[in-house]
Each structure stands twice: as structure tokens, then as C-alpha cells.
Image 1 (cartoon, rainbow, N blue to C red):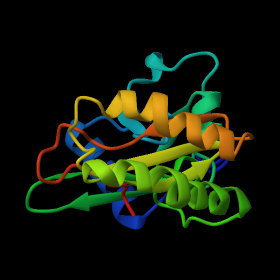
Image 2: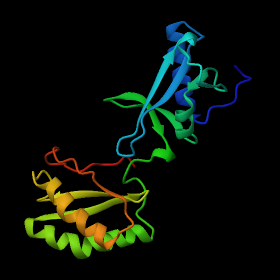
Image 3: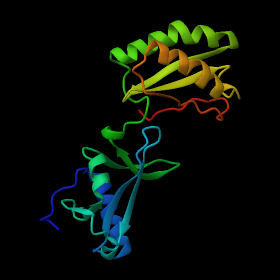
Image 4: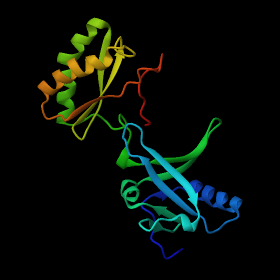
Length: 203
């Protein structure tokens, strides 16, 4: 085990101790820890951390060591998790591994900066919000990432059955005219969440 390179992810001491404790409870020192990116979507990145038997390893898997157990990853997950950190979180309501991954930071977790974001925000303030304000709504820029604009609708726009029509026919058309280099627009509002409608990114 000690000959294997360390994985591209860092385990906190608590996460490592938790894995070792689970293995001890299983009474099987040969178990491997598989870490997989189940969904790479920046809107909702999801990870799976499971214990597997050695014969469940796939030929293309990459195997790492260095924490007192072997870590198995498929090559794509290893690439997406490079520089990530795994911790163990325990609260009154839940417990589990938490992955902090700078490569898949949730939408809204990064500061809004840069000339493209400034131009999109200006277009929203000048051309979009005056229109939707007539219906008691407002649109907020959440993030611009890889030329995709992520928007949040509030007020009268949230939960409105016409929200998708408003986005596709009105807001999207205006923004594409004002900032032609953007490649897509996504609404990250949770339109079904009642009093607390907005998609909240984990900070």
C-alpha cells in the first residue's frame, strides 16, 4: 500500500479516521475506497464514496495509497477531483463525507468579476429589470462561467408559470443582443420552493 502514490484528493484527519473505523467495523482490511464524480454539473455536483472489494476494481481504475487504505478512481473522476478535499461532517441532522472541489465549485460560490460579467450585469440592469419590474419581478446575475450566464428570478417572476417563456423570449433575446459572445443562459431559480425560492449555492 505504501508504494502507491497519494490520491489527487486530500483526506482530512477526521475523514481518514472515519474510513479506517468503517473498515475496522467491517472486519475487512482489504477493502478499497472508491471515489467517483456521480454528477459533474456545477449546478449540483454530486460525489459517491463507497467501499468495494478488491475484485470490484475495474481494469481502467487508477489506484492510490498513502492514507492507510487504497483509493480507487476512474481516470475522469481523478482528473475532476484533482486538488479536492474530503472531510467528514457530523451534525444533529446528518452525517457524511463532504467534498470541497475547486474544479466543480457550485454556481454562485465564486465572486462576480471580469468584463463579461460586468457587461451582462449592466445589460440586466438597463434592459431586463425595467421590463420585469412591471410585473413585480427582478432578475439577478448569479454567475458567468464558461460563457454561460446563470440567472435567478425573484419577486413576481419566481414560481410564475410564464417564467420559462419570459426567459426564452425576453431575457435571453435581450442578453444575446447586448452581449453576443455569451453561449447560453440558465435559470437557477427554484420555482417550486415556496417562500424560499432561490437556488442557494454552498459557500
